[in-house]
Image (cartoon, rainbow, N blue to C red):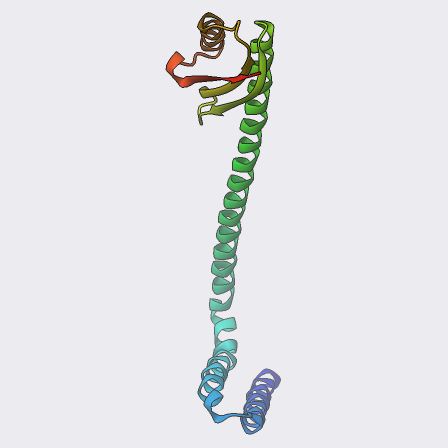
Length: 170
C-alpha cells in the first residue's frame, strides 16, 4: 500500500513541477517541445511500477546495455583501425626515407654526387618510382647514368623506365 501511495505522490509532484515550468517558459513556442518531453516522462512514471513487476524493466535494461556495448565495440574497432592506418603510414614514410638514403649512397658509391633523390613506395611496400638529380661535369656520360639506373633497378626491382635521373651541371 505504501508503494502505491509513493507512486501516486511521484505522479502528483511531477505534474505540479511540469505545470510550474510551463508557466515559467519565456516563449510559448517552446511549450509543444516541453509537453512532448513531459508526456514521455509521465508515461515512464505511470508505467514504471508495472514494468518492474512484470520484469520488462530488467529486459529493457539488458537490451540497452547490449546495444551500448555493441556501439562501444564498433567505436573501438574504428579507432583501432584508424590508429593502425596511421602506424602503417608512418612505417611507409620511414621506409621511403631509408630507401632515399640508400639510393643516395648507391649513387655516391659509383662516384656520382647526388643532389636530390625521391622515391615512391607503393602500398605493397615496393619501390615504384625513383627520381634522382645528380651533379655532373663534362666527364659524366650516359654510361655512368645507365650504370646507376641498372644498379637501382637490380637492387629494388624497379623497371628502368620508372627511374628518372637528371643531371645538374656544375
